[in-house]
Image (cartoon, rainbow, N blue to C red):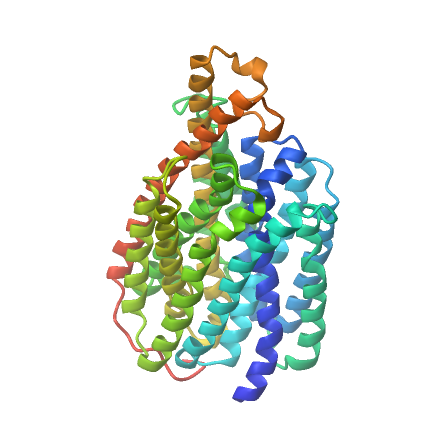
Amino acid sequence: MDHRHVLRALSGLLIVLFVAMISSTVVSVALPQIIGSLDGTQSQYTWVVTATLLASTASTPIWGKLADLFSKKLLLQIAIGLFVVSSVACGFAQSTEQLIAFRAVQGLGMGALQVLVQVIIAAMISPKERGRYNGYLGGVMAVATVGGPLLGGFITDASWLGWRWCFFIAVPFTLLASVMLARTLHLVEVRRPDTKVDYLGASLIAAGVSLLLLWVTFVGDDFDWISWQSGLMVGGSAVILGAAVLVEGRVKEPVVPLHVVRRRDPALAIVASLAVGMAMFGGAVFLGQYFQIGRGYSPTEAGLLTIPLMAGVLVSSTVAGRLVSQTGKVKPFIVAGVVVLALGFLGLSFIDHETSLVMVSLGMLGVGVGVGMSMQNLVLVLQNTVPLSEIGAASGAITFFRSLGGTMGVSVLGAVLAHQVSTKITDGLAKLGIDPAASGSGGSTLNVAAMPPQVQEVVRAAYGDATGHIFLISAGIAVIGVIASLFLTPTKLRDSVDL
């Protein structure tokens, strides 16, 4: 496809990517209000995010593999339909349990949209030229991440809309993208009817990861770290994932191609993506909660306060994408990005409920710049090493591990935050001579507005002070990404679509 036709098709793909991204960022700022209005708990707050990421993570390799076997355009249209239906269902949810279930279905559509857009772009554009178009991708992702919190805050604060429209708002954009792609996207499809999808391997991977995340959620509260429940869940997860590795090594068409994962650069790119995903998703998810519950700002104000994070992603992804296309080199930008990411989280680890907003903004800016420089370029490293016939499985693999890192990050950091908050609230109320059970707080609800003023102060201070701890963990995780990226081979991106 020439540049003009690529841009026409790309416009529809960018809208799809925008919708998939904004469906998370719109909800992120509104989530404290949503969980408060549905009388949810901190654990349920975490699982509204985790359910989406888990479903997206588990299904991503399957969508990537299906893209190698069947029509990429048809798969994208199916994913759009799934996403629209689940978004409407989320908007009508009447309890946190329903919302978590519908968000899991929405995660299936989100995972498909994100990986299929990358696969289709890889089928149209060579890796070296892709750096320029990755700038467009980064820009759209940044607009979604900048505009999402602002839009989510406005919708939540508007009395004539309300938080349910955070889910409904994606529907018209998605339908518009579907019409545009039907008219502009024309790919030469190579059918391979003799191949099979490895559903067993995908099911084992999903089951093993789900069991591990359930353990992370409940350990420390419902049972001890060293207990028969921990042994059963961790041991069971290890056995299931071990079986998944055996299956992936033997089947003809594995969901996660081990021969790709075993190579040096793809393996390092996957490790770095795992760390970046874990740090970024895990850290950024709780910023909206920090500003609203820890600092007392409204959803709209919380959206405005996250602009440094999103602006960092926008500028760095666009500039780095252009420079990658001009030079053909990708490693220097990845290394620099992951280093800045780690430093940004390190700065955020010092925040509490009284920290200057300037210091918080500088930390968020560092995180945004780091994500923008590293995330898409790590995908590029992997895509540069595989032939066109494996581009779907390879893209699905790295997206899978990045989402897996994000899912684990949200679960682990959410569990740490819940434990820290519960302890701090109990101690704070005890100093005031208030029984946590009688006060209606103790970390059991996020409906802060319904609490007495004295209790509100204790809860806000607890959330504000506890958030710094999870950012310190995120900084440590990002260091793993720094180490992995340093060992990447300095190579030039190829000019051809296929090897």
